[in-house]
Image (cartoon, rainbow, N blue to C red; front, side, top):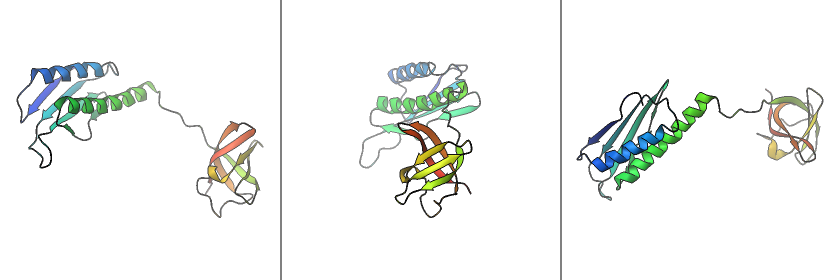
Length: 176
């Protein structure tokens, strides 16, 4: 971390044990990304709720190059350690996503193919021919919005894949 960890206690006394747990978890975050610029943690005990006892609330704010990662809601629990765990877990997941995006490890979607329906049968299945002349089987479960647009000659886009008995079309949609 470029800037030292900042821990703030509001409406409660400072606790060395709680601060040590926060420091331990903040160090663990650096395993997921070495690009953390700063980390601010706020622990507070708001006024007591009517049905519950006093709840500890933990909010985390992490800065990395080009982005701020923060808990999107206050993590509250009667046990301060549970609230800390929940807040750090939420930020850890978002930090892992950031690290994957930074490395370029995000999931790539297969490109959609274009074609025309060449054969259609009454019970909602048929065949699509792509621009290269390959035929793909489809059924109504693979059609995004089945309806009156399904007709021989209709232009479609779809996701093609090899299946057990040939090529199969999934996510079939009409080209508008």
